[in-house]
Length: 198
Ligand SMILES: [Zn+2]
Image 1 (cartoon, helix red, strand yellow):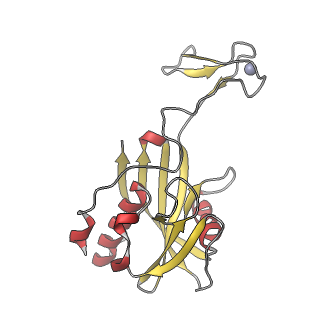
Image 2 (cartoon, protein in one colour):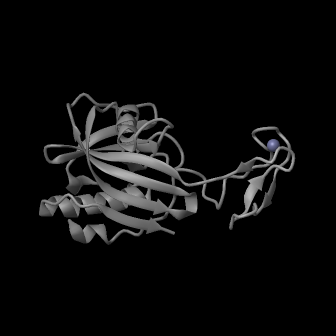
């Protein structure tokens, strides 16, 4: 199984439009056109509003997800949305304000796979620099077999790790998490892994 893991090269595509920033033309406070400049005391250019003085900081977003497992199988989802429509992934998505990251991971499992999960240990933190995201993936227990395709999924299935469709995995972070998950599970470990995608 492990020799398969290194055989496939991966085309890095991620959850949001890649880029060094989310473009901003107008101030969200007063609608005046913003300019890009380094505010006093800062060290990076920010969108600054010359009219009302607002400084619009942009910082990485967190993607929360999990690997739901039941007996010797894991739950994977086939995407019904772009990017990577039709490719396989784990339930994961943008955290909402006001929730903890493990709550976000459980919510995404519910939304994308209609799955009731119990979030376990954190297994992967992946910095995705090209899309300004941090992906946090947890181990999880699938509480029952009452799951199905949510609105963002074409198909959801429970598979043995030997059945993972490696050539059709949607994202580099998911691939990384699956690889480490399998290595750890084979050795009876629950480690935390860090990775950075340029
Ligand atoms: Zn303004």
